[in-house]
Length: 397
Image (tube, rainbow, N blue to C red; front, side, top):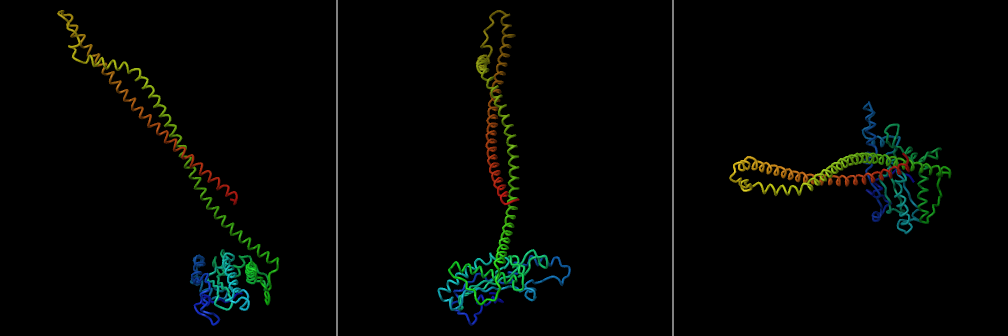
């Protein structure tokens, strides 16, 4: 079930005597990543944090992979090998062998999700040997460690994080995990009508109670993961909520300002309307009189000699004509023309006031449309905020 692992053999960089190179094209390579790249991916950040805390140069780690490879506490990686039946009942060239390959493929596709603390970097399904079998190479690791690197290699702790707590000398975390993986493979076999016949094994299997405890531990781990994801989602939603609240406050300020502007515009429009009514009333009253004045001024604006009759032979009449009548007519014409100009000025002001009223009324209409637009945007944001509050209430603060 478990082995030392030879990545070069698994990837067929060389062929052993028991392989058939002509059938190697039927092999399946799920992944084949350089283990050093995996170590950089998993541990570079933790290594940098660890070295930053060290005051002595001899305690710093230059190459974490080399440290593990040359050390005695942990292996750089582990391998699990799975095979269904043997060459007599599940030969690679037979239909039964093809069924075995299908089961192993299904098993492999769920392996990484099922074992998140076992980082798979090489996995191969071999069909060029006597019996289909699967090699999975992985790096076991943990995060949040209080000793050494906060993310480091540890098979025991990686399996413990999956719910395998060990116990006796035979009931190690590894033995419990291997048994659970066998059970997983057996359940897939059973779905395809193949029953696992257990024989010739010296491994002590989990009791029903232990197995149930193990399954509960897996469920707890899954729930913890889901809780962390929900917490992150909640934080994101909170950030979005704060943005929505800021937008709501800005929109409400705009609405308040728009209302004030609209009220002022309404006042201006009402004042303009009242003034227009006043001017219009005055103009209506003055129009007939001004027309008469205009005719009168036109009539008497000509040479007074042509308008006034001759005084005759009497000296007193001539003096009256020259000294009183003619000057009076000139004054009347001047007054009439002044009144007419005042009327024209009033008419111009009336036209200006009409245009001012139209501008004020257009501004009112524009502000009314803007207020309605802001109210609609405010309503949509409040609906979104309400949705967030319901989600937040469902998931918890």
